[in-house]
Image 1 (cartoon, chains in turn green, orange):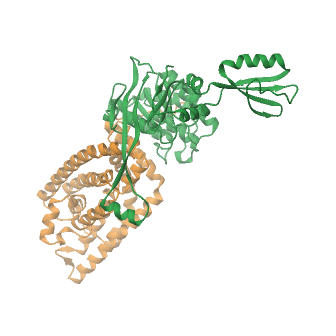
Image 2 (cartoon, chains in turn orange, purple):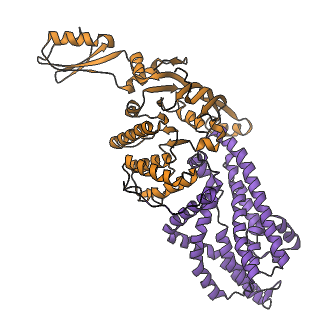
Image 3 (tube, one colour):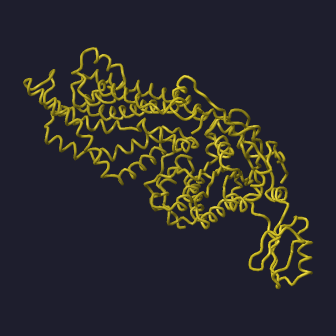
Length: 336
Length: 277
């Protein structure tokens, strides 16, 4: 990414290495480990650099164990890096200065911060006191968030009586009551149904629009990424494989599109137009180079009686998979 | 969304946070009335056993042991039940879960030292506990007929001392719990602490019944100021000087405890943020 003068998040050659104890199975190995402990260095984050300007939403993508959560933990101040530098809103995160903690939030989809036995409203009140939000401001943002997330009826119920999706919405509301400028979201829609995921995505987009918040988001749901992020950072084995626009990612790693064509007369051989991916109910799917799709579509329309024709980009999941398949440890960068 | 709730006048800053957290604790614990009562009734068994044993010994020795009468034993162990409730704090055994389940991470990303959550939450809980304790104390008093001779000064100091006991025990058990930052195999260490506390705090028996060297040891260790001292303020026969020396020692241990918490926390969090969870 191009460097930006007003970046909210700056990360430079950030590294985190964990020392992990290691031994073989069995009694003999247990006894041996008493006198000779073996450790292995695991490079969870191996020299990551990027910048995120104020107000941008960036998708942080990678398989399990790629280093996403470790990076988020360092940026939110939970982990001290082994080396490298980072500043968020001008603060070094792992110093955990109160001014910094008051301006950021970390939401981890699999962890709860709300008090289990009482209504979410009471937990909101706790957060008001923790973040010292002035009364009038608190009321305004609380009512606004409650309305945006449509949780007016839920916040009065004890949290233990809420469904997973309802609880997640309440968790997100609680995490944003102090109106953080930077949001670290680790799988915020994990385990939620499609409707709930969509509502949370819409809310996050609206929060970003209203408050100009900077958001770094990890998600295994590509729909989250497509809906929210123009830019993605792809990481694997602790190194960045791609940093750039989602569209460019697709162009670079998936230079093909799929033409689905239904002909009035079935049984035609279309292999001359592209690679035939399959035929189903008279509908033929063709894999065609991106720069050829318009021409191929025009030829098909001219040559046959076409009842339906669509052109599709490959699913982002497939593109990302392709990135990992093609990846070498060298970093690939691209402008947005 | 209609306006959710009109605010009252609120305290600001840390006192405001304490007020909210204490109110939260009361709300939560009132939902667990039955569990709280069951816990308290179970807890009563311990002092009642001590009381029955010492009352029997006193009666067999002509009505007193080392000058402590049956009625004074009853007073001691009934006040014991309140002091014990007051010094229930966040257990060191809870630290492993706190770290493993990520609760500590949640606390670390907030702009408040986590000890305030525990201090405020357990302090709020005390108000529920005291409410539930009153009928139990009345029942015990009817059965065991305690002898009380309490001055206004003693009553006033007692009200301070039970909170002093609460603070000292909170700090010390926090320090003990923070050992979990380095290793989770700490049960043996906790057991050692609790055994020493049992013997040297006045929990098992009034400290006056211990040999002289143990009394001297108890005077300089913190345990007595979390148990025996507050009990004896109201159920013992302390001189005015002893009352104030005890308060002074409590203040000293609160200060030392706070210092220990600050130092161990600083080092422990550095360790935690190096290793992760």
